Amino acid sequence: MKRYTFPLGPLETNCHVLCDEQTHRCAVVDPGDDGAALAQWLRSEGLTPACVLLTHGHYDHVGGLTDLRLAYEDLPVYVHAADTSLPPQLSRGLSWTAHYKEGDRIEVDSLTLEVLETPGHTPGSVCLLCGDLLLSGDTLFAGSCGRTDFPGGSWQAMMASLKRLAALPGDYTVLPGHGEASTLSRERAYNPYLKEATR
Image (cartoon, rainbow, N blue to C red):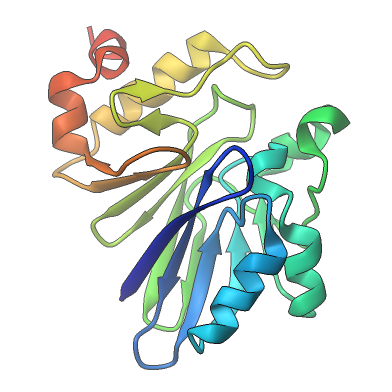
């Protein structure tokens, strides 16, 4: 597996692209807010998106969907059903072809991504596990966590989700929706919100 991460859009949302090295087909996690730039980059790298997986439905994570789906017809787009009722001002640009939920597995050739429901930032926030990667969306950041003061947010749910992530066995490379990558072991040791959730 090869992975690429780059910020897209004015809020610099991290778009993560996970690729099968033999087929060059990939899963796009959160296309950010610039689908045209993403499509151009994919073509320049000789990569073909097999699906788009959304960690949640906020506009800075989904705004690029329209242009991306124009560039790649019949592209499957997955989102948790709970986020399809977010207020339009928060979810502008959200479109989807399928819902996924806890325990679902999305396969792209040699890659398998498993869905973990982690509400708090939004009702339908999810994290994705792929090998030793934890794609945490806006649930877990390096040294922080997602805000819960938007409509649909819940601090109580966020604490439960962070506690769940902290309890995952072993270690993972954490790829968040904004900011730098981290590791789960580092976040267990130093992230004040993760520590609060596990008291």
